[in-house]
Image (cartoon, rainbow, N blue to C red; front, side, top):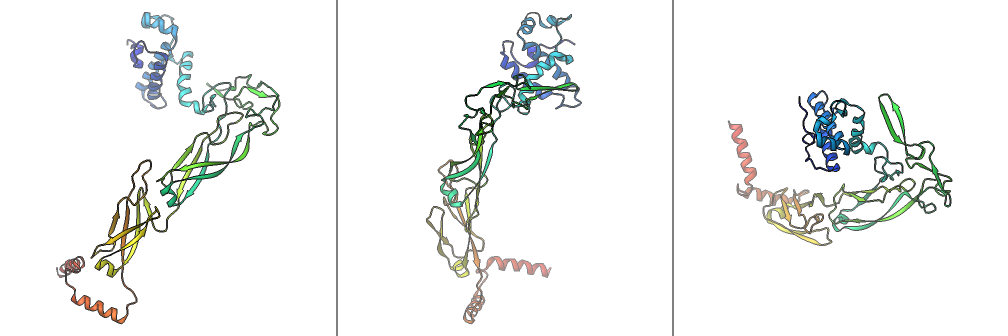
Length: 379
């Protein structure tokens, strides 16, 4: 079976640069990798095909020969691609493994994965739990917090070395920052445990930080809590976490906000809910009352005559601010009608007179229900 054109295999035009080739190869290799397609013979064939294409085109000399002679340039001993998983396969696969698994194989120079003899370890991220009131979530505020953390040592400026002393090459890794160990068919490369990937060792450690390049300290930070923030929101303060080891980049600080329950209001998104008990006479005759709002004002609630238990009155725009907008949610007041208790003799007489004078129009719901109930019993 004739081989497909390598550019067609990778899905790139003939004049593509190295970055485009690598991007196309990485995408296809992840899609057809045998580990992601166990037992799929077709996927295995495509994986070998794209690996062979990338191995050829990423090399300038091989690519020039392929562009001129095509597949004939590698026939009769002219070269062996990775379709047979030969030595070249490991070099092409190192690109995709570095991209996909770099974060798990030691630190990059920026401390976030990859390789390099001068890699620095990034500081740990920190978590801070901040509890605020519903009023504070409504109005927003600036909060000062004390965070125990590791900060850069001022004496050695984060290097970990005693001022005035130098650095020498790590003898364990010979300055590479990584060491290799053979495990069966594979060769595992990991960060040097002695120099932590720096490739160098300090002649004398800093006396103030013990060679760590950082020390324990309580920091006071100001946190802006925005209006309308919700319970469980996470605020990220970049590079406010622990300082990195021996000059490594700092981690981040994550502030998890929790809003305390309120005595009157229950929150659901931007809306507020409140339950207010009203007298039976007020529900029957109508009336009004005031409720406090979170902006330190008052809102008037009108009770319509004949209000039923559980009915809600909507106060538009009296809810919580909607984050990053100028809009507000609504306040819903649920009216719980309270049945009179501890009646006097006269009150009981009045209610009995009212019941005798009542008609179906006074209690249409209950009269209708019991009428249906009676018809069921009769049938």
